[in-house]
Amino acid sequence: LDRDLDVDPVLFAAHVDRRVVDRRLVLVQVRDEGDDAAFVVELVVLPVALIIERLISLRRQRIVPAGLLENVVDVYRRQGVTPEMLDRLSGDSPLGQVLAAGLRNVKSSRYVMKEAIEEAGRAVTHDLERFLTTLGTIASISPLMGLFGTVVGMIEIFGSQSPTGTNPQVLAHGISVALYNTGFGLVIAIPAMIFFRHFRGTVDSFVVEMEQQAAKLVDVVHGERFDYSRGTQPPRAQP
Image 1 (spheres, helix red, strand yellow):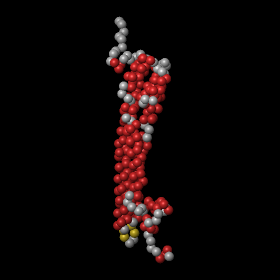
Image 2 (cartoon, one colour):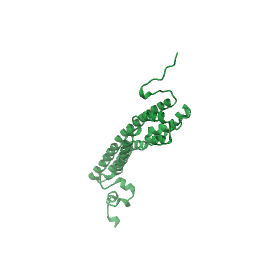
Image 3 (spheres, helix red, strand yellow):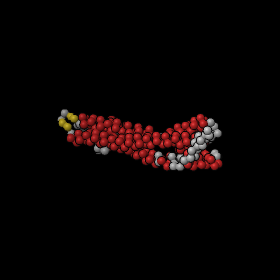
Image 4 (spheres, helix red, strand yellow):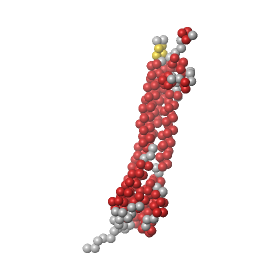
């Protein structure tokens, strides 16, 4: 019976349930134009979710609240450092975590206090950069995945060639597969790369600002900066 049938195995595989067909055949022939790009489309959900999460998490008021340092200095001068104050400050924001680390060592030397602030700053920076590596990886590999789909489409185009001629439908399908995958790869990669660089710049600016405010706190605690928030100057030495 098999000898009496002249069936193209590639076209036959297109009508068989893809769950039971060898994956190599699925890559060559699929049922419709969108299936070849489905694995790229699914990746859209992940970068969009990461971008939304980072947009919410990296808000300035949440990372470096305005006026926090001035309030901390005022409370420190009025009542000193207390466990309750440190707990509230640590839970306030990433900047609060850095300032609290310095105040926990308020009775230590300037060097020890700055060392504690730097350690807390490294931990906070690591938290701020969460998911950025994943977003950058997606931005880098999306064009490659689109290129992979393009190669699959080209393989299908050349596979449609036969001694009796070219099947126009298979040829058109292969071209559409190549173009769809290339386009989807770029659609994912471009916004992912834009937001990746934006978030990296945002984190860097937050880190610099937290370092500056922490340095001011160290100066205030060790008496080298007098009422900087009120614009007064330290007393001049008498001649």
